[in-house]
Length: 139
Image 1 (cartoon, rainbow, N blue to C red):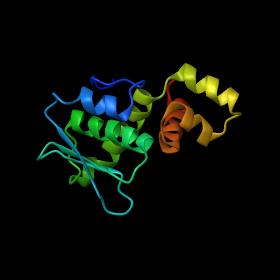
Image 2 (cartoon, rainbow, N blue to C red):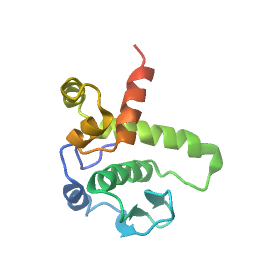
Image 3 (spheres, rainbow, N blue to C red):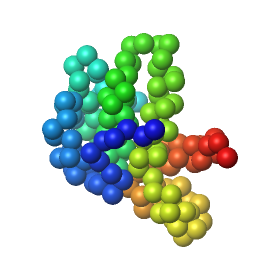
Protein backbone atom coordinates (compact mmCIF):
# COMPACT_ATOMS: atom_id res chain seq x y z
CA UNK A 1 0.00 0.00 0.00
CA UNK A 2 1.32 3.39 -0.99
CA UNK A 3 1.09 6.26 1.45
CA UNK A 4 -1.75 8.71 0.87
CA UNK A 5 0.30 11.89 0.56
CA UNK A 6 -0.95 15.17 -0.99
CA UNK A 7 1.60 14.95 -3.79
CA UNK A 8 1.76 13.30 -7.18
CA UNK A 9 4.42 12.37 -9.71
CA UNK A 10 3.65 15.33 -11.95
CA UNK A 11 4.50 17.95 -9.31
CA UNK A 12 7.75 19.89 -9.25
CA UNK A 13 9.79 20.13 -6.06
CA UNK A 14 8.26 23.56 -5.39
CA UNK A 15 4.74 22.22 -5.97
CA UNK A 16 5.41 19.42 -3.48
CA UNK A 17 6.77 21.81 -0.87
CA UNK A 18 3.63 23.96 -1.18
CA UNK A 19 1.31 20.92 -1.12
CA UNK A 20 2.65 19.64 2.21
CA UNK A 21 2.58 22.96 4.10
CA UNK A 22 -0.39 21.81 6.22
CA UNK A 23 1.16 18.49 7.23
CA UNK A 24 2.53 18.06 10.76
CA UNK A 25 6.09 17.79 9.48
CA UNK A 26 8.53 20.62 8.75
CA UNK A 27 10.87 20.63 5.77
CA UNK A 28 14.11 22.60 5.68
CA UNK A 29 17.18 22.71 3.51
CA UNK A 30 20.57 22.28 5.10
CA UNK A 31 24.16 21.39 4.37
CA UNK A 32 24.15 17.72 5.32
CA UNK A 33 27.20 15.52 5.89
CA UNK A 34 28.93 14.10 2.82
CA UNK A 35 26.88 11.29 1.30
CA UNK A 36 23.59 12.36 2.91
CA UNK A 37 20.83 13.59 0.64
CA UNK A 38 18.16 13.95 3.26
CA UNK A 39 17.17 12.97 6.76
CA UNK A 40 14.01 12.58 8.79
CA UNK A 41 13.83 13.00 12.55
CA UNK A 42 10.68 11.40 13.94
CA UNK A 43 11.16 12.94 17.38
CA UNK A 44 11.09 16.50 16.00
CA UNK A 45 8.96 15.73 12.89
CA UNK A 46 11.54 17.45 10.66
CA UNK A 47 12.78 16.57 7.18
CA UNK A 48 16.13 17.98 6.08
CA UNK A 49 17.06 18.13 2.39
CA UNK A 50 20.66 18.78 1.32
CA UNK A 51 20.62 22.17 -0.39
CA UNK A 52 23.37 21.13 -2.82
CA UNK A 53 21.13 18.63 -4.60
CA UNK A 54 19.64 19.26 -8.03
CA UNK A 55 15.91 19.95 -8.12
CA UNK A 56 15.30 16.38 -9.28
CA UNK A 57 17.42 15.16 -6.37
CA UNK A 58 15.54 17.37 -3.91
CA UNK A 59 12.21 16.19 -5.31
CA UNK A 60 13.12 12.50 -4.95
CA UNK A 61 14.65 13.01 -1.52
CA UNK A 62 11.59 14.89 -0.29
CA UNK A 63 9.29 12.05 -1.34
CA UNK A 64 11.65 9.49 0.22
CA UNK A 65 11.73 11.34 3.54
CA UNK A 66 7.94 11.91 3.44
CA UNK A 67 7.47 8.15 3.17
CA UNK A 68 9.68 7.71 6.26
CA UNK A 69 7.55 10.35 8.03
CA UNK A 70 4.29 8.69 6.95
CA UNK A 71 5.36 5.43 8.58
CA UNK A 72 6.97 7.06 11.64
CA UNK A 73 10.31 5.41 10.91
CA UNK A 74 12.96 5.73 13.60
CA UNK A 75 16.39 5.95 12.00
CA UNK A 76 18.07 5.10 15.30
CA UNK A 77 16.45 1.64 15.47
CA UNK A 78 18.95 -0.61 13.64
CA UNK A 79 16.66 -3.65 13.78
CA UNK A 80 14.06 -2.02 11.54
CA UNK A 81 16.24 0.38 9.53
CA UNK A 82 17.07 -1.97 6.63
CA UNK A 83 13.48 -3.12 6.24
CA UNK A 84 12.05 0.41 6.39
CA UNK A 85 14.70 1.70 3.96
CA UNK A 86 13.86 -1.00 1.44
CA UNK A 87 10.14 -0.24 1.75
CA UNK A 88 10.76 3.50 1.49
CA UNK A 89 12.90 3.18 -1.65
CA UNK A 90 10.31 0.94 -3.31
CA UNK A 91 7.41 3.22 -2.45
CA UNK A 92 9.29 6.36 -3.49
CA UNK A 93 9.88 4.79 -6.91
CA UNK A 94 6.24 3.75 -7.24
CA UNK A 95 5.06 7.24 -6.24
CA UNK A 96 7.35 9.03 -8.70
CA UNK A 97 7.49 6.79 -11.79
CA UNK A 98 4.60 6.63 -14.24
CA UNK A 99 4.80 3.16 -15.84
CA UNK A 100 3.55 4.34 -19.25
CA UNK A 101 5.92 7.31 -19.34
CA UNK A 102 8.78 5.07 -18.23
CA UNK A 103 8.07 2.57 -21.01
CA UNK A 104 7.85 5.34 -23.59
CA UNK A 105 11.14 6.89 -22.47
CA UNK A 106 12.77 3.44 -22.35
CA UNK A 107 12.01 2.97 -26.05
CA UNK A 108 12.76 6.59 -26.99
CA UNK A 109 16.15 6.66 -25.27
CA UNK A 110 16.99 2.98 -25.88
CA UNK A 111 17.30 2.31 -22.16
CA UNK A 112 19.70 5.20 -21.42
CA UNK A 113 19.19 5.64 -17.67
CA UNK A 114 20.37 9.27 -17.50
CA UNK A 115 18.08 10.46 -20.26
CA UNK A 116 15.12 8.45 -18.95
CA UNK A 117 15.57 9.79 -15.42
CA UNK A 118 15.94 13.34 -16.74
CA UNK A 119 12.74 12.94 -18.76
CA UNK A 120 10.83 11.93 -15.62
CA UNK A 121 12.49 14.49 -13.32
CA UNK A 122 13.86 11.74 -11.07
CA UNK A 123 17.30 10.47 -10.13
CA UNK A 124 18.84 7.38 -11.68
CA UNK A 125 18.72 5.80 -8.20
CA UNK A 126 14.91 6.10 -8.17
CA UNK A 127 14.76 4.64 -11.69
CA UNK A 128 16.95 1.72 -10.58
CA UNK A 129 14.69 1.19 -7.55
CA UNK A 130 11.66 1.17 -9.87
CA UNK A 131 13.24 -1.44 -12.13
CA UNK A 132 14.16 -3.56 -9.09
CA UNK A 133 10.56 -3.28 -7.86
CA UNK A 134 9.27 -4.53 -11.22
CA UNK A 135 11.66 -7.50 -11.14
CA UNK A 136 10.61 -8.55 -7.64
CA UNK A 137 6.85 -7.95 -8.06
CA UNK A 138 4.72 -11.07 -7.65
CA UNK A 139 3.44 -12.32 -10.98
